Structure formats: C-alpha cells, structure tokens
Image (cartoon, rainbow, N blue to C red; front, side, top):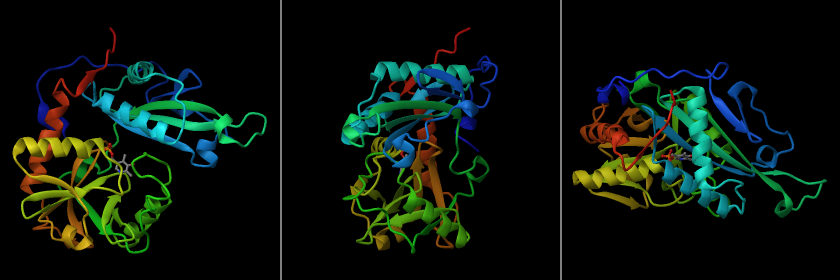
Length: 317
Ligand SMILES: *Cc1c(COP(=O)(O)O)cnc(C)c1O
C-alpha cells in the first residue's frame, strides 16, 4: 500500500518522457541532459571536500509538495555555508519543473545541489570559487520499499557510531557528511535490520540515514528538538498532529524515553510517514502499524492535494 492507492479519483492523461530521458533528467552547466549522462568535474569541491548542500523535494501525482519550503531551506543552507546560489528561487522552480516535465514523471524525487565548485587557477581560498548549481529529477524514491509499508521499518539504535556533533557539522544544513549515517547502516545490516537511529554524545536520539524520528509517549508525539535536519515531512506531521488534537513536541529525547514509545515512526520526503515496527529486534507495541501512525500517514498523503502545499507541474500538451 502506498499513498497513491488512497487518493483515487481523477483519471489523468499519461505523460511521456522526452526520448532518452525515461530514467530521469539532470540540469548540469545550464543544460538538461539524461540522468545517465549527467557528470560533474572531478575537481569540484562538492565531490572532493563534501563542500556542498542539497535538498530533496517530492512530486506527487503531478504536483510539487511544499516546493517553496524546500527551496527556502535550500537557500538558507547555502547562506549558512556561505555559498552563492547562481539562480533565484523562481529560476530554480522553473528548472525543476522543466526537469520533471522532460522526464515525464508524475511522481518524482527531485534534488537540488549547490557546491563550492572549482578553484580558479589553483587558488585554494574557497571564497574565490565559482559556486555551482545542479539538479535532477528521477522516479519517486521509497526509503521504505512500498511492499513493506505495512510491515514497517526494522530499526536499531546504533551502538558503534554516534551522530557527528552539531558543533562540527550543522545538521540543519542538509549535507553529504554521511560517514556516520553510512556506518550506522552497516551496523544495522550486521544486526539483521535496515534502519539505524543515531544518538548524540549525551545519549539523546537524533535521526537516521535520511529520516527524522518520532515516538508516541503517553499520548504525546515527541521528536528531537536539535541535532537533526529540520525535516519538511517532520514539520508537516507536527502541523497535521496539531490539527488532529494530538500534542506534538520538539524535545530533548533520551534513548530511554524513545524506547517507551507505544508507536514509533520515521519521516522523510522519500516515503513520508514510515512506521517503525521493530527496534533492536523487539516488536514496537504489538509489532504492527499503530493507529496514530496510520492516521498521520493517511493525512500526510491527503495533504498532497491541498492547494496550500501543491505546486502543479505544467506537462504541456
Ligand atoms: C533529508 C533528511 C531528512 C528528512 O527531511 P525531509 O525534509 O522530511 O525530507 C532527515 N534527516 C536527514 C539527515 C536528511 O538528510
């Protein structure tokens, strides 16, 4: 079961990719190219120094979800890293729509990237680099495979790796410093699971490999106030919970409190609200998708049709 199954309704004309763009489209050096042909310079410091920020926005049933919020976060991340974006928000929105239209995608995972770029004539002072903007649109990505939507996520609290301290890498700037998260993934695999959740140095829960986490404790939804990316899906869930009269709070979330959760779930653009049904090999609650998680997941997909959130893509004739 996926979000798509829930909304039924209008029959839409099929959209077709421009020939050669069936697997996705990318914007590189001012041109749109097939995703498989998109390349960057080996001396771009986005690659060699992780000197980069990015964002990911979803397209669902032909419309971007919270496009402006994603672009605003992206711009703010660039400012924070002192990167100069070569495009305005309107230009970026137009490029992204162009990519989705070219790839002919109704449901898409759309990424924007800004790198420090390439040094001019070997000068290593990063202030002098020409910053680069890249973007691409590929078919929608499910971090929890659709077939597992009811089975849920098998998570572990990582024991062998901590989240990078926020004093070293600001987690509110979406970044490619994934060494801790990737180590967490391997720990999870070694323990027979797939989804790590990392703690900080004080033993508080932070987040996982591309997802925020929530625990339903004594009827309140708790999610970490700091040490994480401020996910747009997280924000959406907080807003939906408020509308439903479910108290939701940003808190310091000790591991022990998280473990008390009657329900646990994770949130990300790449999949929405994803139930966590096992933790460290033990069932969460009765091991099935809990009613609050289920309700929020439904509301999350319904919100994609809300005109306050949706920016329709013009696919042309
Ligand atoms: C992208 C990401 C998330 C989820 O953010 P959304 O805006 O909801 O997609 C959470 N944690 C990390 C580390 C991420 O990179």
